[in-house]
Length: 199
Image (cartoon, rainbow, N blue to C red; front, top):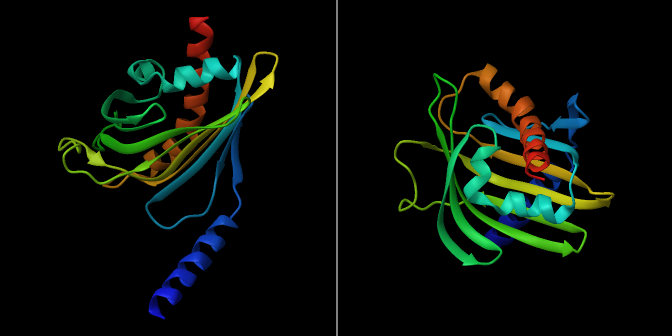
């Protein structure tokens, strides 16, 4: 009986959270930035925009982890710990955090899903594994990180970038606000610029 009540309570909690709508907080260069209400310490954001390239080019660039630090904002490097299959792996992303905050590590299990020839989703979430965790970085907790790509034709791809997580550790309010508004914006801008420069 207790287990049934627990499951029911969890379902209600998740249903209530799912009903919370994204609120647009900023638009720049045809990229829309959204946020939503959350508990203390948790940082949710979303960005939507368009990339000037076919969907396969965008997908290949996102999956090219060894070169992601050439364009992804504040990303120092990526380490691949385990390749589970062609679409799924365990990785660490190491991010530079402005002083006086400490650099962060995202220890993630990621997966690429093909919805159709015209739509893909790259999903990731945090895992706990002391063997892979860096002692020189604060471990951020990522509930979900989803990047949805959809082919719009005419060498154009839509991108929908959602993040919900806790950066953990101490971080000033001004830096949290900056990350929420600028990181997803720069992510899409830098991805587009990098792809255009490579073609």
